[in-house]
Image (cartoon, rainbow, N blue to C red; front, side):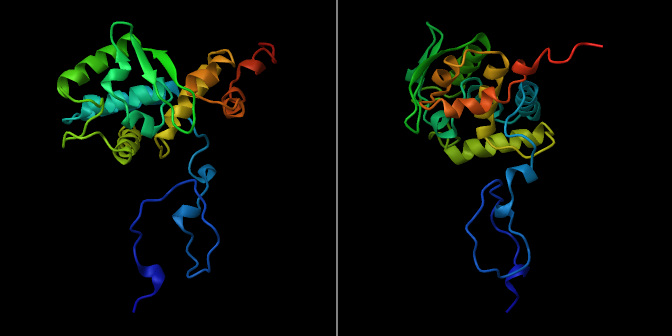
Length: 220
């Protein structure tokens, strides 16, 4: 019988998660024991990286290219969790008022977000591509897009965009928070927009904003 460590890995690495210590069966380091810092230096995406992902999806083409690019756009623009995006229904979109009713999970606070021109155009096209469906993001089997499918779309988009590190879908929510903080959005507005009930969840973004440090050094 072959040794345990000769079997190939059958699961994709869950980067950033650590498991409880188990009796060692081999000297090989499990991919599940890697920390985020071993894979990437930051847990958020820059606006230009998000744009590159959407452009890469469209350039690559495919039957669901527009849907997938719209997934990226809404996750980023509204700081959605994957399950929140999967559960989006057309009844949450008010085209006349250009708003999106956002239902937050994890006991987050609900909010109504404005929808901008690029989002409205993307949603109208998506509605034509997938008519007579209650959910915004649909699969080929005419069922709501599963959270795991959305995660796969985001991971693949990062590869298509040739980003220098592997990404995961929650990085788009972090990207939203970082962008708002970088743009000096009021600290009372950010938690409301992202659905945070605890201000401590918002601090991670304001701590990353360079704004407080601007002007510390005089220009040469």
